[in-house]
Length: 94
Image (cartoon, rainbow, N blue to C red):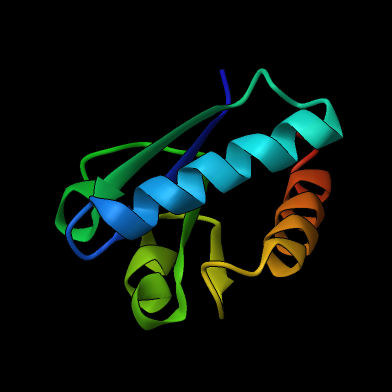
């Protein structure tokens, strides 16, 4: 199964909100077979994922782990949709 890991500093509020928004976008794209979870930044290195997602303040810390989506705004659904769709297409996941 393909996996997306959303990270924030503490692994609580913002990563959970982005996770829920990613699930909405995946449903729109018909890609509901992709697992989405969230985590704090320090635990991310112990987790394997196909795509890592974080806001721009932590995205550089995720890049060494693999393909990373850096969000300028955690509430901008259009940005999330565009970047996620592009990455999924690039990786052949949709």
